[in-house]
Image (spheres, rainbow, N blue to C red):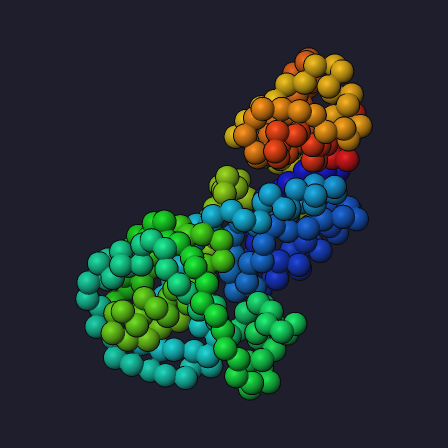
Length: 294
């Protein structure tokens, strides 16, 4: 069994927990994910089954969309509801939409101390738990779109949707929004609704997957294949001689621009992907004769 399946990750599961659960349900030995989603968060988590783990290099850099809730008036040491309250401040809900729009565009963001980023071979959260101070360098991120969805004046909570670049920490964004609103705050919930082309509408929960693990029609429908994943790439068609050379690992001369391409043979059969660099085409990820990724 090979392909990409979109899981609607439940709260409380780490990304690796999710991979292990899918492996157990589908009885597969090999699987991986395309980027960590915090245990508190829910939503879209693409899982690569079998040799499709080779595709991860093309699926981890994508933009994402989230729906987040920001609790105002209280700050925690982790930036989310699981932390300890370290500060409280009065809340005045004014100009919320205008404040959100100030975050559009490229900007520096300092990753949270409670994160898995490594500095000097040690994860940041390990420094935090040990009470050690460490200087964290800011990272460039980009907010493509951000919109207010609702305001709960009783709970002092706002809900917003944000589309952003890889590496954006929504916990930090929530704290920064609260600061611009003249108060403090923390992320109370987070749902990832989009990772590149993978949508929440296509995501499957564990229960549904368990119920249909032996349903070939269901699995064929929901296991996304390589040609569909890369359907937006440009196409190169090889004649029979060049096909044989390409599949045997021989680099071919092509005038195409540098980049990744979908490769087809003269009968329009999908062969996989190839990369062009300095006018040389090299095989990349190949579909085996039986439809598997080699």
